[in-house]
Image 1 (spheres, rainbow, N blue to C red):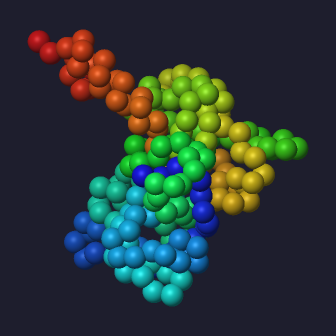
Image 2: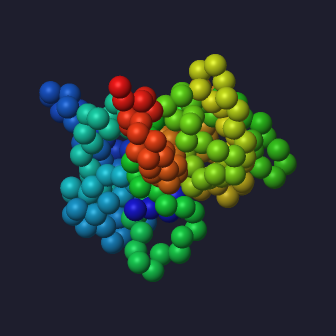
Length: 213
């Protein structure tokens, strides 16, 4: 489990696809999160929970499965790219953000970015499979960053929602360098998914929202 408070930006050193294309091995340079990382530890990489399989001085390596490559932005990473990093929480960790599982639900597209003197307004477009879980003033994780939804509007293709990015977030995460057209990993609030599942079961509907015959 994570909180969505990014500890540092790492740098991709290598992304090697397996011969069968079913997986990849990702190596990242990072000073802070490798300080106490060990084999089997969890580190969120731009919002994706990965398991450390190897560690050297200032670097760690993780295996990435085909499902993760296809459902997130990790498959498009290149050597030199920056990624957001966070170690899993400890029992004594302050919950500075919200409960983030590191299980990316899908990918959104940065639609627009409007700079303001003290913050940037960013609008992100998502498809219908994510739109139903997003609510104004609710929590959301964007590339692993815990953020608050300012507003959300339905569109013909799903929804578009806004977030405010303060200077600290711009400087400490990869979001500062993102522009229109960039793809972003989205993890919705897990509570919304549980509520949907509970209401569907209570009302006798299937997991996809349909009513069994």
